[in-house]
Structure formats: structure tokens, C-alpha cells
Image (cartoon, rainbow, N blue to C red; front, side):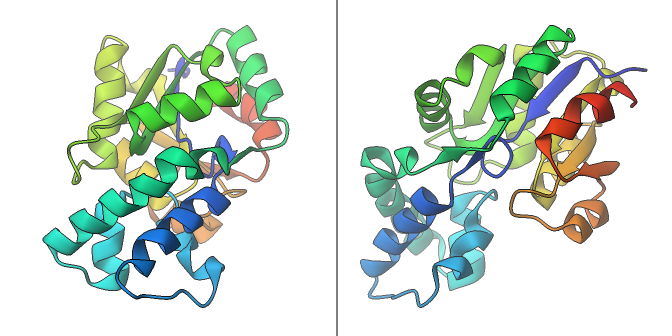
Amino acid sequence: MPKHYLFFDLDGTLTDPALGITNSIMYALKQFDIEVARREDLYVFIGPPLFASFQKYYHFDDAKADQAVTLYREYFAKQGLYENTPYPHIHDTLKTLKDMGYQLAVATSKPEPFARTILEHFELAAYFDVISGSDINDRQESKADVIKRALDRLGNPPRETCLMIGDREHDAIGAKANQMDCLGVTYGYGSREELLQAGCVDVVDDNQDLPEKIQKM
């Protein structure tokens, strides 16, 4: 059955958030007297839920990870969310998809208030029928939970008509948990290998290729 509902990840798919996210992480880590030698080492934080990433990469316990997320958000809310750049041609791609009749949603692990602010700031919000982010008070929400919330807001359409589009394995895993296909994008922060191993049905290297690729699915 052809796809009709398209669910977009935000970080690494619609916008490049590297500067704001890494600055926010460095601000949080500095409060624990942890200095980061290379900004690029923090790119693994882009996409997955923050709480789990602080635990995975810095071995923080629950309390410390919770504190780190709070510190991260102190910087991010004031400055980091604007240290962000829409990917080239993304406006044109989204407009093309809307004109083709697709319904578009955002499903991001970023807290929903931050996601809305970013999308509005960069004039992307108008393309989307639904914007679903994580619950800012639930540190351990998964990507699957966020996608499920977006599905609910769209009236739970048939899963075979839905497609997740994202740059990390968590997008594919979350889509699979909701019985959806996932199309990977390699211009973000996950590799082709990561995306295909996680279960993406295909990948594209440029967002301009999305309309043609999706139309053929």
C-alpha cells in the first residue's frame, strides 16, 4: 500500500543541531569537572534520548544523568536551540511532499516545547500536521513512545501507510516497534551501515531525493 503519512525526525534529518547540542553537553559536563577534548566526540548524543546517552557514554547513574539533563536544558533553552541550521533544500523538499498530498508529522526525542520553538524559528512548523516530541518531565521516554504519540494524534492510520524518516538507528527501532517502515537519511549523524542494520528499508543521501524515493515505495 502506498505511503501517505510521513513522520520526520528533527535532529540530523530536518536541521543540523550539532553546535547547540554539543555546547549544551559541554556546559553540563563542565559542572561535573569533565572537559571534552574534541567536539566531534559528542556527536553520538545527536538523536538518541539524552538521559540514556549520559548513562551510556559517561556511565552516570540515574541521579547524575537526571542532573546532567537539567543542566543541559539550562543552556539549550536560552541559547542552544538557536545554534542550529536547517539542511539545504529542506524547505523545498517539505513543500514538494505537501503538494504531492502527503500528511507530514515530526516525531523527535527532543522535548516538544523545544521542538516547536525550533520549527517555528526556522519557519518549518507550517509544513507539519502534527509535531510530537518527548515529554519534558519523562527522562526515559523512547523514540517508540514519541512515534506512538504522533500516530495517536493523526488518528492511528493504517501502519502500512506510514513511514518514519530519520538518521539514526533509534528511528528505525522506534518505527519497527510501531509496525512502521523507516527510510534512513545518511546526511545526518548515522551511517548507512547503522541505518540498514537497524532495519531501514532503504536510505537516501540527499533530502531532495525523498519525494521520488517515497513515491516509489
